[in-house]
Every structure is written in C-alpha cells, then in structure tokens.
Amino acid sequence: MKAIRIFNVLLLMILLLTGCSDKQDNFSNKENDQSGARVDQKAQQKLSQYQDNGTSIKAKLVILNNQPHFTKPEAKKLLDTFMEKNPTIEAGKVDVILAGATYDGENLATLILIRNGMDKTITAKDLDDATITINGLYNEKIAEGPLAIIPEHLGKLKTGEVRALRFDFTKEQISIKDYDFTKGATASLSGL
Image (cartoon, rainbow, N blue to C red; front, top):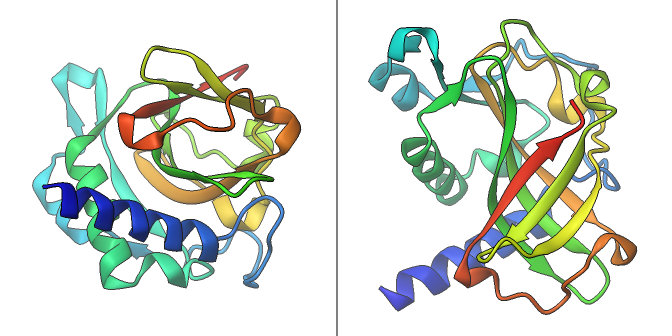
C-alpha cells in the first residue's frame, strides 16, 4: 500500500511539473475552444445527469486540447480515481478539489479539479474575484491567494463539467512551507 502511495505522489509531481499554471502557458489553443475536448466517458456512463432531487449534479471530466499531459494513461487513471470518489457536484456551487501538491522551495504547485455546479456556463472571468485556500489535515491554512487562471486553460466550463488544472502559489502566499501532503489536504473557494 505504501508503494502505491509513493507511486501516486511521484505521478502527481510529474503532472504538476508538466502541467500548465497561471504562470506557464506552454500550449496554444483557440480561446475557449472546446470543440475537440475529450470527455471522460466512464464517468459519463456511470451517473445520471441529476441526482438527489436536483441537489447534486453529475460531474464529468473534460480535458481540453491544450491539456495533452492529462490524456496520458497514468494521468487519466489518477484523474478517474478522483472522479469516482467525487461523482457529483452540489447544485448551485462552483467548488475545487485538491488532487495533489508539491513545494519546490519557491512555489507550491497544486493539481486542482474545478467543478461547476451552477446552472450556467462559467469562464475564468467569472472566477476573477475568487480566492483559493489550501488547508491541512487539521484545517490549518497552508496557502491562500487569488484564483488567477489563464482563460484558455479553463475554457467554457458547462454545468456539471470538471476541469483539471495546475495552479501555483507564490512564496508570499504560502503559510506552511514544509507541510507533508501525504497526510491529506483540502482546497476551497471563497468570494464567488
């Protein structure tokens, strides 16, 4: 079991190092173009669109063309695991799930899943006033900062869609630099 955890941590580190962040724009794409988006068919087949009398919405992972690093089998398997653990989104909310994090001595690179439970499509502009917070196992604040996302990396996030993104916190935004993420941590959004 420990070997599996170590493998997952290493895989997350690789994804974080190769993924796009608000400071890295390694891939080009037509602005907000999702025409070639790949949808997580497995999650789509398992769940109905609405559950629990409209209080939760089916979550489906959508990977944009400018995210080829998330289409690799190892990455896809890891993201599928998070989708299986979090199959629905609370209706009327946009939330975020922390899939992994690594601190390089300068920045805290995180892999997050942004999930749209609103009854409308959202873009990066809709999240301009949001703040993202990473908390530790005992609710201690690890990092906090404005959710600055490159519009092309989020695209148009329709109701029920989930987007995997890399998000970096700067040294100034990090409260606990030596946190052991293998213990667990959570992410939350505020200011929406």
